[in-house]
Image 1 (cartoon, rainbow, N blue to C red):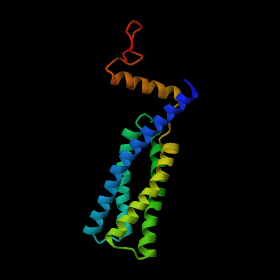
Image 2: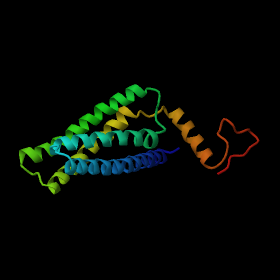
Image 3: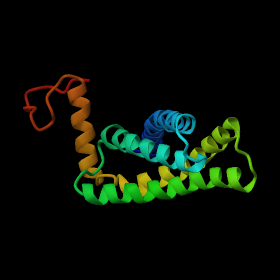
Image 4: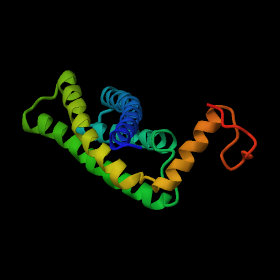
Length: 176
C-alpha cells in the first residue's frame, strides 16, 4: 500500500473512532445534564455536588458505551488495569469539568440555572478533549497490527455473510 493510501486508511479509522467516541459522548452528555438538572431541582444538594454525582453517573454510562461499542475491537486482556485507568482518567476529567463549574459558581457568583448549565457543558467540553486523548492512549490500548488486521478481516467477512478467513477452504472464493 502506498504511503498516501496508508495515511488515508489511518485517517478513515481515526474519523470512525472520533465519530463513535462522539456518539457515546453525546449520549453521555445527555445523561450527565439530565442527571444534573434532576438532582439540582429535586434535591437540596449544592450545585457542584449535584454536578459531581451526575458526572459519575455519566462515567458509568460512557464506560459501557466505550468498552462495548467504540473500542470493542481493542485489547480486552487487562480489564482490571483498563477499569483502573478509566476511573483515574475519568476522575481527572471530572475535576476539570466540575472545577470550572465551581469557579463560576463560587468564584464569580454565577449560579442561575442557565449559568450553571452553560458552565457545566463548557467544562464537559474541555474535559472531553482530555478524556479522548487519555482513553485512546492509555485505557483502550490498540491491538498489535497483526491481530487488528485479523479482527477487521473476520468482521468484514462475517458482515458480508461469508465464513471467517480461518473457516474458508481454498476452493471457496472470497466474496466482495
